[in-house]
Length: 170
Image 1 (cartoon, one colour):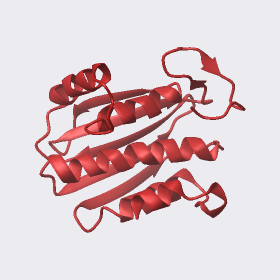
Image 2 (cartoon, helix red, strand yellow):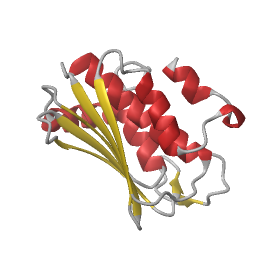
Image 3 (cartoon, rainbow, N blue to C red):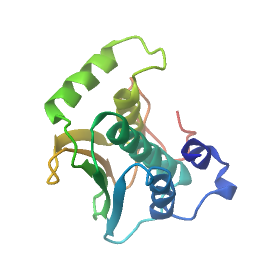
Image 4 (tube, rainbow, N blue to C red):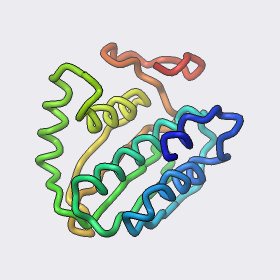
């Protein structure tokens, strides 16, 4: 059902990034105590940007539930003047350094659709001109952070060239 929520046509979509994130979070609540926190003044963004970030959050929460042995998670959205920062923190047993190594390995392997969650997250964020990072969470587990500059400038994978906002997403 979380995948359905993210693949619906935009005309059926919720109105804001925060609403979409709350919908994604709802689908993981039976397995994890999740809090959503929003700070700052939102900026109008293309619906595709909302969906890309919601997919990153959904993948991060899936990883928390599946791999981290966590009980709690916090999803944060921070609207800064120059960037939008979305993070997922947990109280699990993951190691940020191990996730960084795993991402490097995923980037180098042939993509067969399996075990590519971190690379998919990274690709979505870098496609928006942003960066994905892994650090120790204040909750004790891992904090996955997607930082996207504002205004959003799309980047085509492998080209590292900005793509005008009117271009269709890759």
